Length: 546
Image (cartoon, rainbow, N blue to C red; front, top):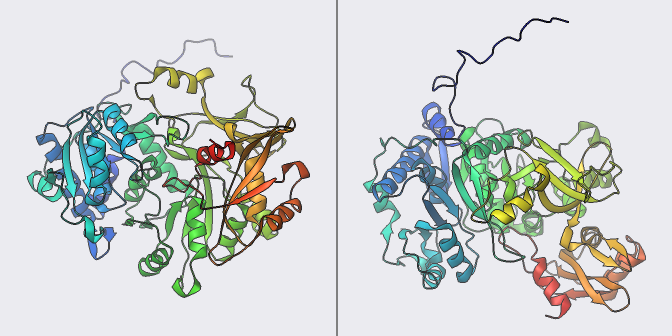
């Protein structure tokens, strides 16, 4: 063993501007606009914009915001659907040094008012369709932000010309300078975005993202989604949801084309996929179900069906199998608002292609393994010990790494609780298989305890999804004097399909242990969030008779 002194790898090897820059996804647009200036960046109806134009508009937005006194650390809110201006906000707002707060367009006025006040928005960029709810929200809070109004050509006719007395978005851009020296982050830990949780268990919490995490997750998407150069990405996932899982930055990194979409409609999806040669799209399982439920007369022949990246809820095995049968390549990912969207991926093995379709669907239903951008992923028990990799023992999913949020805005107690023990506690319950892949069994609050036995609501839902008449199903606990709780299933049937309560209960008995079978079925339209997640808190309230 060499007993000499260690080599000094510090002196004269200091960090400086030549060898260190803060990581940020903003530089993706700069590079692509320089390398592929004429490539189509944005499609929206008849609109086409190349990367040269997109970059110029983003910088002009940053310049105009700066001229209006908005700078480092200021919040700029956006109440916009998936239109070109929303994409521009993902670059132009942080280029001004500000923090983008993309607000869910389906929230009620009171929640929007809370978000505006809690996030201290200095400006709000709003689509004319959502001016009524913003007007109501502003009436409920003391904030007086700058209002910037977008009148999108594809907005409903009734929304055109609506105004709150603010400045027009195009007029604002006319004030901007495309040669503006936009602001790099001083530190990659600087905030780039503020996103609010769904608020299904109380008031939404403000999740803060930094430039480093956004850059790493965006490049992680390239790898996990198998994106080559010049993908064509259809915006079926709301950009307000975890900043569109960071795909506004991902697509620009690989000089792709953003195909914008105000609302998800089955026939429209098929038309856009065929017209533009869409290669990638994202969304919750409900989006896949919408595509599959589109009447054949409204579908289009696709030369190369796109890859569909799905998350937001564990996808039913039946839906996954149907997507593969339709020729779509499905990539199952998992994540939360607190980890920039997807940070776990079901990395597919070629050998699995040889397995029967039912086994393939079961394998694909697993959430998978960590993204390259996520440093730590495990399933742990209450004492924070890894559970056995036996595919049966449940524990809580925990994460560590650079794509975990900075924390919850103005909520130190919640942040400390979420990060206790040096891991981010997701609140999701899962099992771990011998190959290291994890599978979500339930949210901790969604486990049904009947007669002392734990019942996974997801397992019951998967069984009912196998029935050909079932479109959407949500299973929750119903209070029971004898058993404590029993499963109650809310079912939404496919258009034109029929099924009775007795039929579905009998069907469930073919796939589940007796104690797991729902005691009752409620046929109704199931409440969902804008990203397709079933709002189980509403179903639980209904089951309790609140």
